[in-house]
Length: 217
Image (cartoon, rainbow, N blue to C red):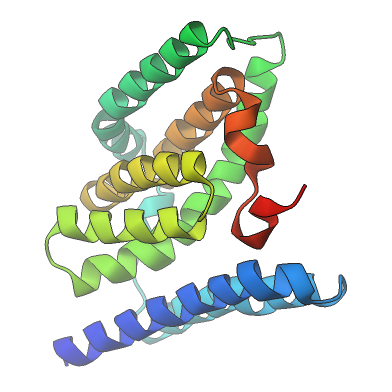
């Protein structure tokens, strides 16, 4: 039964990766505008939601990642604090070296806004991908590595986004596997995303484009 469950989770992850690839490389480029949101929400978002709902209906369990317990929040945050602090220092150093530190009075507003978007991204990344990969691969470091590679490849061929998502994906997924709490993950993700926005030269980010649109001008 355990092997059967592992195969099921592996297949589900594979299907979701395929759906995302089809959307990024085919639908977003060639499909008419009215069809894109249907495919994105109906398949890319709908499929993992259906998988999670089916699993929860069959084996009801708690959702520790959504816990409002401050102890759970701090336990996860402690795993992320050094990664977040060191990455922040590296980003600021890059900004100083390239003269791109463009801090303004909208920094905190952008952070408060992006935390919500980061929370939604972490729901999909962790409750679907990381949870399933963690059930297929017993070693949390290897599981986090697999999730990080997948997260990075979704952003292909944008090199800067691929590097950031590879590193961030690994530490966020590892933290989730050890102490699941989406609020702490969203704080780390949202903070680093906004710091990067204020630190990385815009030309490096290539307007955040991925897939075939990366080469569009």
